[in-house]
Length: 134
Length: 72
Image 1 (spheres, rainbow over the protein chains, first blue to last red):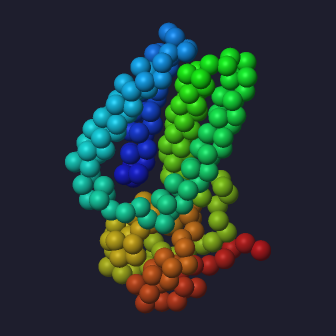
Image 2 (cartoon, chains in turn blue, red):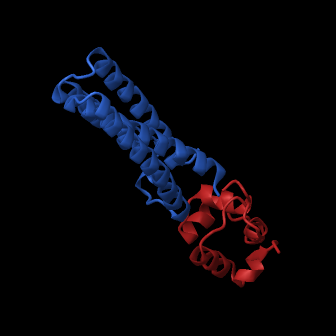
Image 3 (cartoon, rainbow over the protein chains, first blue to last red):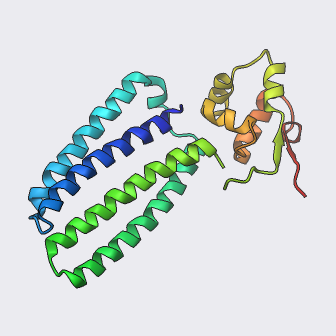
């Protein structure tokens, strides 16, 4: 498995697990104050990402330090396009939800969920495209 | 995206003619990963013009000796 694919798998798992934690926190109180819900989530994402990337770099030091090649850059661009669309739809849905439930904290949480889902889609698309090429 | 590009290539054949050069060595020489060389050889990925020229020059042949067009 190529290094970029391993990295995408690891980051997708990190986003799913930390996103699940955030979802569980917000599900208990959908209008939870932003900092109470987001701060632990952001810390978890940052720490888990650093640990995962360092572990990958130790495992494959040569590939980790190599820049992305033309095919990998193309894959990253296409995956970003898909995740941007997901993010746009998610933000519009968050805005629509705000019309029904005018709560600023809830709007913030919905926007963060859109971002989490967009990131998961980005990594999933990278995996799919790296496997299929073009 | 799932469609194969209508481009054929002789990369594997030329690699074997050149002392059975490994995919990793070819990738290093032309600036792509081993996985990209594998994708090119399997016809799943069409390289950029620059990489196509780098591959051809490495083998000392013209681009059209490495890559061909099989579409209409």
